Image (cartoon, rainbow, N blue to C red; front, side):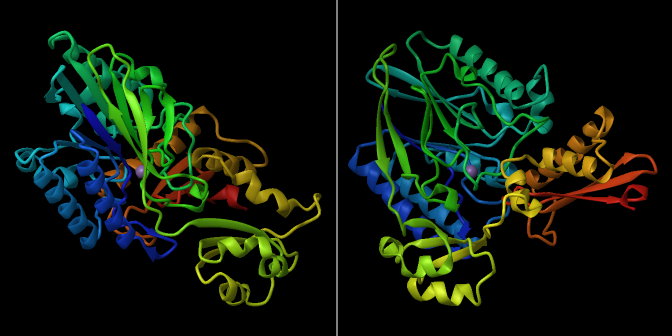
Length: 431
Ligand SMILES: [Mn+2]
């Protein structure tokens, strides 16, 4: 059985204010062509169909078009919701499109009810595990502990239990939307850290023939049988070096190792990250090759140059973003601030800030729990789409937590997709 694995379409997402709708439409064309030309038997889409809980109409129409074309081809398709999708919104109508061979799984309760397809070697059971937000599904799945590894583990226990009841020789594929340990991140995935831990070990998928993963946007192989397809398009400049692709996985008879082929996706426009003083960027002949790219320019001039964007755009008409990173002497405390924040989680930044405004005394255990609760509440609400458009757009949310009675109040604000947390301290500690 030949399976096409893709994920993280993020329909409706734009790239630094440039609409990607035409590029996403081109990807859907490419998907349909690939299914037809490579005689694909089943398509799996591992979550993040849309970029947000309430997607724009044009994105919904594109998804509708993709579903019609897949149904017309008569190729069974299994899809799950990701952390960017609103599982409940996406799941509306799932029962009906099921009859057309499009199996959309958005409810964790159904994770052990597979879509069963067959070929000459027998049956293949496809288990769709929608994104499992630990705080929301722990009880439902009876997970012994909080956190991603525990809820995913509980869901996979159910999968293995169901598989054990099936005829011997039944092959199996699991779709999951998760951060598996060892995977490489990029800047366009929304942080899903819970209790300081974002990832689950690859061993959680032991016992199935193939785990088709979504969430990380780079195409990657975690173990031979546990893979990410990555997103079909680059959604941040950190993906400038990615080759965007899908996997064609060929399952043979039971016990045979699957074979894998990587199918590349069309590139609407290459990405380039360039860095230097503005005069160098305007003159360096090596940069000729980036003149038609979408460009992120980092200017290192010690003094911010006059109208840099207007000058750069003459050579790089598609420059989209400017970063200022002035060269400073190493003893300058400002030099390292951005570097200190880079790669730190919302929770770490919040804890550092509490320590900073309290003369070095960071949150104690109880305060840490409160901060974590606040961050988690915000994430759950954003995921469920219960927070209407905040000042930072749909899904932005704020939670307030009193760290010590009468001493400090921390307000945590997150904007999904931007992965930032701001902590404000009010009360005595603010003095
Ligand atoms: Mn994603």
